[in-house]
Length: 148
Image (cartoon, rainbow, N blue to C red; front, side, top):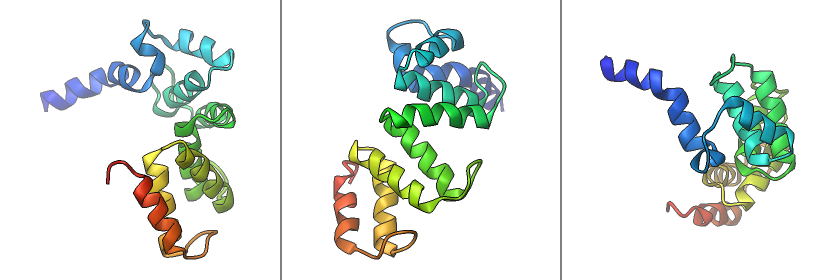
């Protein structure tokens, strides 16, 4: 029980240290990350989205998180593309849009995002969503995953 409480108390710090790219080179704060995000840094935009999404250093605001994810995704940030793909896939805080979800999974997977590659492999294997069953494409994305 004490370990859980300690983990919950330390979550904001752990979040920033492990998920924020600029945390490795300088002390991090919401304000400094937001400043970088506003200047157009896609990794900072993604991180601000995560901070809003999880309520780290700011009140949780999913709509604000999605706004920042979209800005980062347009600039090619693969984790932001993946997060938006998941949201469009489930109709979670965004309108259900399977075609857009598939497009974003592809963009993210092309940059080596393993979860996107896995989701695409599943789509092609089952032939669900907006793609016809294509075992060769499924195998391509399975083999692209370095964890295998």
